Image 1 (cartoon, rainbow, N blue to C red):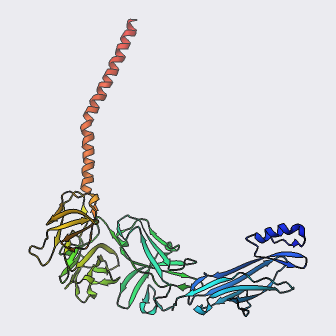
Image 2: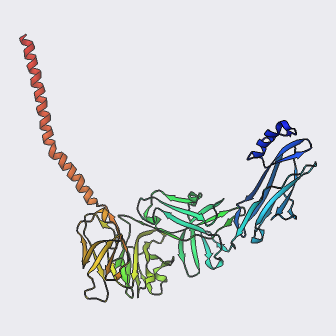
Image 3: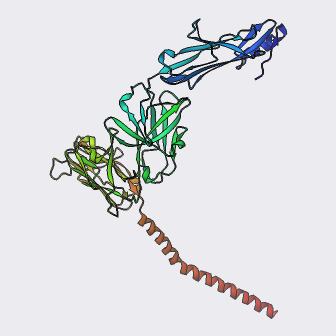
Length: 474
């Protein structure tokens, strides 16, 4: 930037007014017979809103015609006391007491000129953060009791949804509450938990989410899992708490293993026994049933006080509402397949299929009460909150279509079941039938096309022969 001295005479007063109105000119100062322009740049890094424990740097730059070096002074909250004479002042571990309004002032080192005070900039300090992490070569253990409610926290959300079909795109969005400046992000999967700690495994391609968004363009079955993120900024790095957890579930047409639920429904009564088995074509025993419950807990079946695992089968005795959650099969190498949403409810429940229904199949829904004989009730049935059938013991859709996909529930008198998602997949046999129908249609039409072509050819030859005869006669 070029700063021009303006002679002190009335003929340039209008020019001076323009300089004073310029957004780049902070002060116009009269010195001897000249006005000169001062430009102040006052910065706070990494941001004006920081958290306790961060490293914060204040920097003052003054630009003026003919001045090459300034002696700087910093003032806080309009106090007349100088608290620093450094051009760049650093708080190595900022606290709430460092919050305030700061301004700077300059004196020419080898001359008599002095600047005006800069405009004030505000530093806000909030929260408390102690770096209480234990690192290993693969995992990071986080003691949740080491943080207060005022700590800076990353917030994780998912777009467009958490339940996906294989091949769908999904984006994890990480933000820091109350702050948006200067953060970089890391992404983790939750690999296990107990009452006091969680284990997070850094994703190998975590750098994809450096801008706050981690995008998977085509979700695979093994993307099923529990995700968290964390933000950091500054040097040395200041790190937030881990974010809330987000569960991503990816379903597919032919997973390598199936989760078999007994009784075969997604909703279950309390005080019942529930069995979940991982079954694959090779009958291998290397699968474990794991779950993620509504209390944001990632658990093995064997770790439950009312649960036990024998081979690849998990049995839960005396089910309670806290057993509600998403269950899946996990291999010894950590691959997760076939997530199923299980709901345990005290009251009436909806009997609906565990696995997706294929287009063209029959879907039967019932409303059950454990205290009645028979257990299925005469009830009203709802889809996505709208009544679709009333006062029937079972609702039957004889030919399922993709449009039948949605949330279903039932209601008996004043008692209502939880909602269950029913997924509908495309029929491969239907596609094959469509292809065969097209081929048969073509083959059926082909003889007529062939006869038509032959007749046209014969007509053309007869016409050509007639023309030749006429020319010969002439």
